[in-house]
Length: 161
Image (cartoon, rainbow, N blue to C red):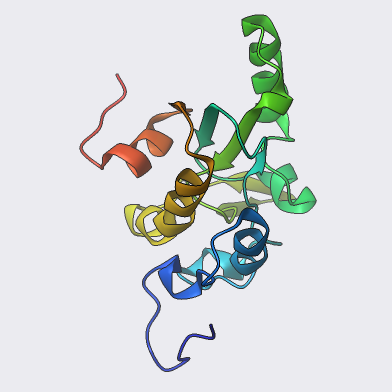
């Protein structure tokens, strides 16, 4: 489906493919213009992992390395997550990993790209991708890795204290 280019974009919902499978969703996410984050990102970073996972983990957004490699949790946060999974006795291959926001939001600092927190509007605009992933994976347990991920799933009134 090609959205009407005259209509303002407010959500990724305009870019979801009619078929609901992870490969089609991941491909369609590359064309998402549901918010402005795509403009400065290298690519959309869709979730990956066991498609029948009982455990799904949600992060905030891709980081610099994720944006460059096109895979979730491959940068410093991913290395920490891997250590935590090993310590917990969980094989990363048994988990589905994704982010609430699919494009890397950053601000320049010299030659570096520093993480910038996505806005509520950007998080809400990206929600259809997350909903589709949850609908397909149907995990028994969802772990939100941080306040932004939890707010994306549970609402903006959620506080992590």
